[in-house]
Length: 332
Image 1: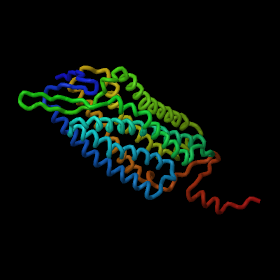
Image 2 (image 1 turned 60 degrees about the vertical axis):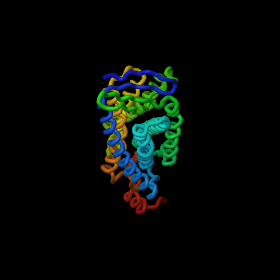
Image 3 (image 1 turned 60 degrees about the horizontal axis):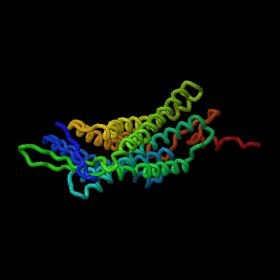
Image 4 (image 1 turned 90 degrees about the vertical axis):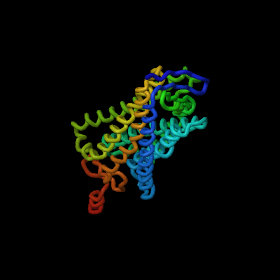
């Protein structure tokens, strides 16, 4: 079965599909994403409330966790419901639901990798320069706000390029179904490839290779005199690695289909189903992140900081540091 593409006007794109399998698949997608919506909103809402009420933003790690949890919360409260309503309700007003779904999906898809990149860079600098606090908590909050502003400004193109389309399900035994689809606007067909390529490079490739580069720096220094410092931060480094692996696994399929959207025509039914599956897989990131927070619960959302090692081998912070300062003889 093929989906034949034809532009009926400058704002709507129409796809014709033969077979009712897509209808059943669409119902499964709606059910799964509605369930994920509840889990993501409740779970990440709890994380945000916990950090805010306990005033835990005084730690750099909690600032980054708060940013990622906020991104997942926005997916659950705006992007997923807009997509579900877009698929179920139909009508002319679904063009706004399509734009809402795409914009917030791209917004959070940009915030999360750059937050992981900066949190990895922050801990790397603390390991390499233990005697100097290069990245303070205030700077972490500033750069986190900067990522959000950059993501909102950079992804405004998704509001313009995406619009409502219709998928017609035709079968001899059942009536014809008209199902909405969020597609690239044919009015700006010359811009599709340019923006989608830039999207893949900026949102996925740059942060991914930058994070891998920082991990290579840590691995290289692990076999030098910095091994003891890296071992001190090893537990929080595992937290970052878990978040990074979740990001790659959930984002990679969606990035592939995003890049192919302007190149693969006519679409096959398998391609459309796989594209919808990739979008649903992307939304599961909020649930996997909750599992990661639960596993690292004795580090995430705690006020106590892990002690870091100074260049002279003394521990900074924690109860031992307080005792040493208290019982240290006075300098004459």
